[in-house]
Image (cartoon, rainbow, N blue to C red):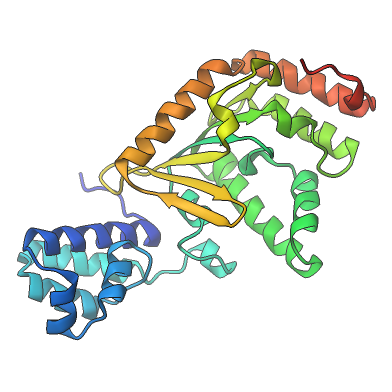
Amino acid sequence: MADPPVSPLISRLQLGRELRALRVGMGITLEQVEADLDMSSSRLARIELGAQSVDAFTVRALLDYYGASIDDRERLIDMARATAKRPWWRVLGLTAQGYVALEAEAVGVHNYEFGYVPGLLQTEGYARSLFEDQFPSSDVDRHLAIRINRRWRLEEGGPLTLHAIVNEVALIHPIGSASIMADQLRYLAKAVDHPNITLQMLPIARGLTPGLRGSFSLLMFPPHTIDDIGYHEHPAGSLRLPKRDETSTLRVTFTEVRKMALDETESSRAFARLADVWEEGRIGDVPWS
């Protein structure tokens, strides 16, 4: 049975990877391609990283130059045509380099969050409060629409699975009002029952943990497409981490944090207790150590 069709972004990433493999396999440098095909080496490097779209005409020229087989030519040219389709995140103004575009193509996400509730699990009230602090008022609704689209794929559209671990620090830091925090925590307490969601809390009382190094995500994609990709946001921007040693390090870190976190049942109870604390206005009275 043939593999199912893949998305434009995965097609772009996979196409770039295969074009690079053909070039390297023939012992051809980027500089040689630039000289012989009058193609910028920086543009070709971006194509190979999946960071830039490429038309079928250009792919055909590259495959001719690399001496690709007839089977590879037909398959890769079809893949180039597939990259021209516009996914929902492109319509909402996002680029293929951002996290949302990658997540929209993933089949599995491991996400550890230190400062915020994981994006896929944020209520509308929590997300709106966050966006109102980060963006101009005219842009808040667009970001909410993006957040809702992400949630739909996890909860209704599939086939995305999420294993999220949230540090307790994120749950005692107010985002919006006390009632918004209480509603958010009650949502988390129920989210553990969703078949596509594994959710844990890392208590402050655990002390020194690998989770203190910061938030990150590890994204897994459909079989026979592309390798796992790590993603880390920081104050100056974000990092996409595609190398196997990088994703291996993130996988080990996630496993260490998972072992130190509460299990799902304990986490659900902890979320419910914190919801009560927020609702009763006692968040400042709770001893965390």
